[in-house]
Image (cartoon, rainbow, N blue to C red; front, top):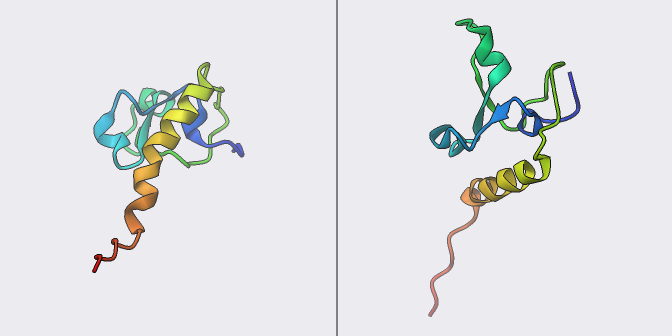
Length: 85
């Protein structure tokens, strides 16, 4: 296992799967290639990377995209604004 998250791996794709990305998941092409019913190809972004981790060639773009899409997720627990007056 690696100390890096799956989301920074070159095998991890989230932009191509917006319906999964909205809930914090991405698709690992290595796991998808395994074609096993026991191995789900969709993983949470923070999943620790496996031994096949390869840094994404556009790692800075990938980090920025994840942070941008993670921001609304982190704000879901915020208290509602207090009414004025």
